[in-house]
Image (cartoon, rainbow, N blue to C red; front, side):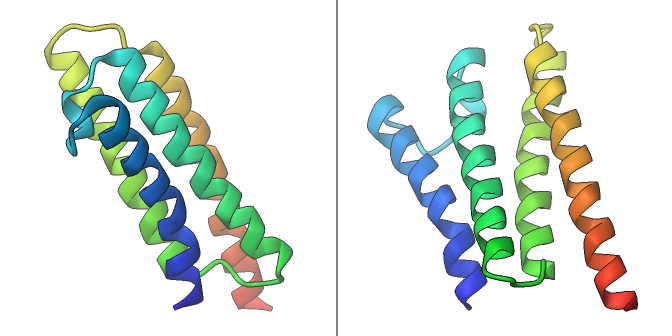
Length: 116
């Protein structure tokens, strides 16, 4: 339960920013730079919460991987929408690649700790 609460904090912060600045709950309809601001707040906040859990010597759980997967899915949806509208998607692709690398590192650590 503690992990869910810690991981929902960055989600709540990014949604409050989204509603406060753009008066919408749908981040997919945002234009490129606005979506990137929202997505960076979400990703950086999420990984800060993961590092916070790691500093408390908590294991990376399935809940963490589910949150990472849902955040990645949001980026993929926006990437597909950008490709369909023929918009530039370079920064989003770089963020998604970095997110894949970090998630794989966490998954490998999770598997290594379970094997021990």
